[in-house]
Length: 451
Image 1 (cartoon, rainbow, N blue to C red):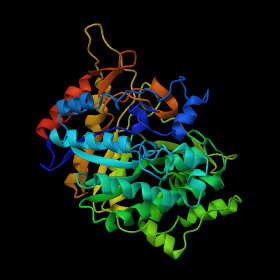
Image 2 (image 1 turned 180 degrees about the vertical axis):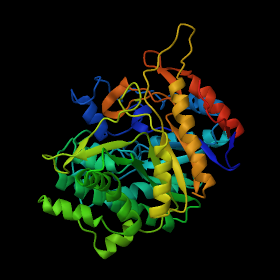
Image 3 (image 1 turned 120 degrees about the vertical axis):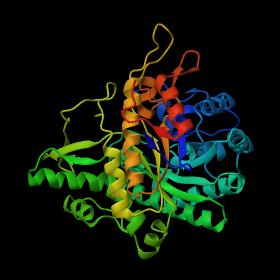
Image 4 (image 1 turned 180 degrees about the horizontal axis):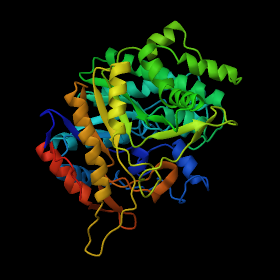
């Protein structure tokens, strides 16, 4: 039996666009995800976030679901266009009221709110003015953040500025998979700089507002392994790690973009952003914690013909059965140890950890997702090992509370502890829901836990 610290924060995670619905209700403005989803062909199954899980109108029911799990922390994002329909200007009172009521209900239920300022739903009005490429975007974000600090900061103690900044920069502007669906590395790198600056300015504003709490940033990690021992494969591994991880971590903790990546981009003829001394001090100012999102790993080899000269390799091992991701729980320990050894954040939170499965309702009405239980249990055993070794992991959140709209994959992938019937929007606890509730209630994990 593995016992976690008594003050360990057990939670679940969601994101505004993925669950809220009510895309134009109560004065909410259009987001880039609203526009993207409404343009045909962008979402795998043709769905949109117009309804999603209708959390906006079922918020009390969903908090009751959280209370049933027994969690003491709920990590959720705020919809920027619900607060500022035009991105800036006058705040929308009804939008602020929604999050204020959510926080009050959470606290009444003994659940601590853990607020993410930005999980990718930029107001479309700001995108029309250049979005994150606009040099004013860090100030736009800071004004938005400061509003939330002032309105909610009396009750919220844990804040994340950005969740996975790789996604709205390199995935959206270089790989073109998320809005605004651009394929231009130079623009993607510039956006990454603007997002990092906005993070730093928002942290400054947090300190200036004297909010009693902690603030950090959350980053996605897929450990990158080489497919073999060839020097060119090891170099490919280093490049992809630089592209995916170090491009954000090095500025955050060291005040500069990684030199090897600057050299590579320069060699390839790509103009890359620089951080002057003032910008570096803004980006790299101390944070209180780093958030870690973990799902699987990458295996790569050298390949000519692409910008990074990297090719993904299918690892020869068991896969999650619905997205092709390898089931690799040990990777979470690798991430935690690496972050602790190389960047030494004062605290670490697992802000997302989950697995997509093709869940279905059995004839007896149950959803038996033993593979999810096995994966989460494996990850938690490695988290416990990290804690035992002195790595300051303070909390853990499952992605996700319930099945939801998984961005460009739509409603086709299920990560939730609760199954959502998208015809009726009924939430049905899965076997993993009951299992996690048991872990949370005791603070103990039975080794080899699975069903």
